[in-house]
Image (cartoon, rainbow, N blue to C red):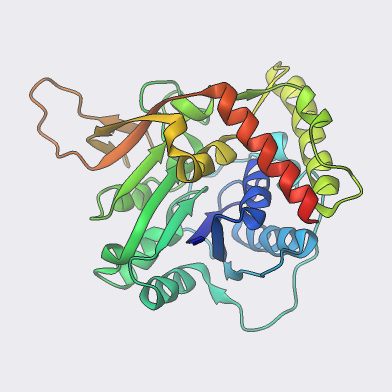
Length: 313
């Protein structure tokens, strides 16, 4: 049976790649895709989610959650690596459909409707999940599994010297979710940055004649150019597809139960993922954290997922 999931994301090129994989994976029943601010602002995130789903046109349309602004969010600009609209200039038009519901409302409704059957795959800042849990006390007990793309446990950050972008953007929400009483799997930058893709990836994408292939070629060619121009790197990282594998292919990873927290107030350490690794640990273990990955297998699985999406479109 396909596993019910909600994908919470802030598209973002790597979010779009992960979404392309997820919408056509027969192991998943994507009940909803909920937008959150992060890589782009709330309105653009919602537009991007709507545009991606309409372009990919999956056999079963998920519900779409509308992002709302996040108070206290970090002021960041990630368009250098993702393009002015977050999606390499796809420039999707905002949908005029009515009756769109806020992302946190959809999360709450679906968890209540399918208790202990729905997993949350969080590919952006954790604003929506924190709001849903705060909105309905006890809701976290209805989550099957919570997979989070984010954090930098024992490596430098990618938005500051110590912080990963999703945690940095809304550290209060991240801390709230990390402290919640639900089963959490964290796929941090330590692991996602190990999986590098060379330009050969383009040759392995589905044909441009398919809906998925047309999108993937546009996004990934832009990503390779922007990494060279702005980071001096010939290879790219795709954080969110790797995090999706944390749900689909957990055996590719080694996992460790850890006691973690998120710094919310530090002038230099906002969003830092802090682990209590002392010999006489005082914090409780609260998450399983991916510590290593079979990089070759991960690349192969992602390519396979993208090619299958091409076959379906």
